[in-house]
Amino acid sequence: MLTIKFPSYLPETRYFFDISFCSNFILADHLNYRKRSSLSRTIIGNFLLTIPTIHCGNQVQISQKKIAYNENWQSKHIKFLYHYYHSFAYFDEYFYQIEELLSKKNIYLIELLYSLLQFLIRNMHLEIKTFKASESGFLGNLEYDIFNFCMKKNINSIYSFEENSFLQPVYFNEKGISFHRIPKLNNSFLK
Picture 1 (spheres, one colour):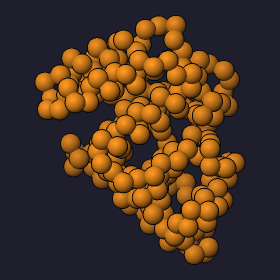
Picture 2 (tube, helix red, strand yellow):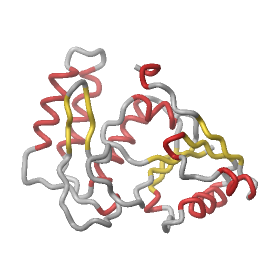
Picture 3 (cartoon, one colour):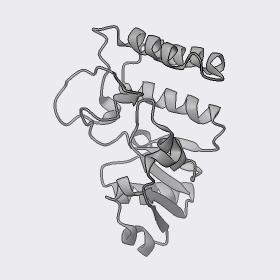
């Protein structure tokens, strides 16, 4: 089973709930970067944490978006996470590993997002193979690219969530891949 989602900076519980249904997960980093999205920002409590990026035109793939280091955003994010979560169970077990990932000076945003995602998936004990679309031969026609990926990996079913409504079930069903659309749950269900 396969699902595909946009990368996200420190995603909410819903993100992991969605991907936990599948054994294969594609991070859609071959698509264009969107400003003011969860690609480079997250809300924790009432606070917005944003990773500054370098502006280099309007049509930049997520995989090519660079992080800006002209301000000390890493230290601010680490301090915030420490103060927000230090009284939570298992804090000491995970915080210092997250601090190490955030402290690294990645050139590309996707490097940071992918390393955080891998860390979280591993520590949630999810049995999911993750792939970056940019490293999996995706060229831009999403349905065609997903179909070819499914053929290469011998995947026969796709799970899509309402926020991925741009995928057309008929395309996959006609090609022998079962397509399942999962309705979006109310976020309060997962808090």
